[in-house]
Amino acid sequence: MNILKMMANTGLAVLAIATVAGCNNNGGTTKNADTASTAAVVKPVPGSPVKLDSSKRYIYLTLDDSPQPPGTVNCKNVFRAEGIKATFFSVGFNQVGPFKKRLIDSIRNGYPQFLLANHSFSHGFNDKYSKFYAPANTDSALNDFLKNEKELGVPVKIIRLPGNNTWAFNGNIQGQKANTELVKKLDAMGYQIVGWDLEWGQQGKKKEPRESAEEMVKRINQKFEDGSTNQQNAIVILSHDRLFEKKQFADSLSRFIDLLKADKRNVFETIDHYPGMQKK
Image (cartoon, helix red, strand yellow):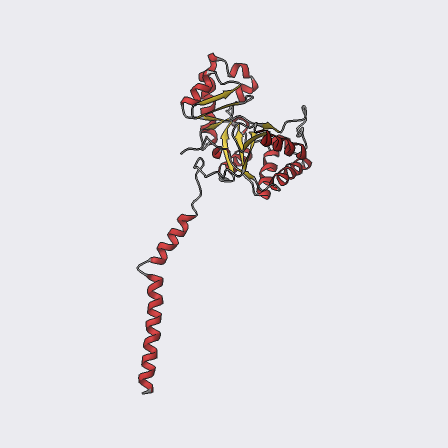
């Protein structure tokens, strides 16, 4: 009788083990689950759309002229420490030497936190803007953007014109150079041109920000309250990497972000998620 009881108990134990094993194996279910789990964390692609919350205020921090170390490095370090997103509009002829190339690579590979975008190869023929935007040089200027896209491996068709606050996307063109042939050609080719709502400017010829962190936040809040941004509930802020070379100004950038983060309505995003500009 005891033997039969032991056999019965053993049978139940074997059945239980077999059931667990069957659940774990299930014709390769575990492997499939692991594959599905891996697929769930696939890195997003630059330009892929996100849903924006109408109750939030979206902050688009954009830095022009990178790579400009140590400013670019300081900006990246601050953004990483603060856990916020930003866009770098980069210039090809500034990418000189292996260190600067690695810096651009780190921005490109840093998505979704960082987005690499196009600011022309020569920065408008080395700041000769009247020549860059002249009708006779339209093709040369266009090729300058195309060269930059190729040289830097820019992953999105998003441009900021050097020295120029113009917007163009989805057939809507406005700003300083709205009627130039270059802008019309870029728009027709599917490029999106981003201007800015507010600039954190440079103090004369010094490589330092003109305004304090507190003043910039005050101006941002005023822009939102006035409804004077290009798109509702969104503000594009222009600055330059080089302004944050010194520790005291990198600290000011951190302070600026902390003040903005204190308002729970504020969300930091990359420029490929700007309202009205996202690909459907």
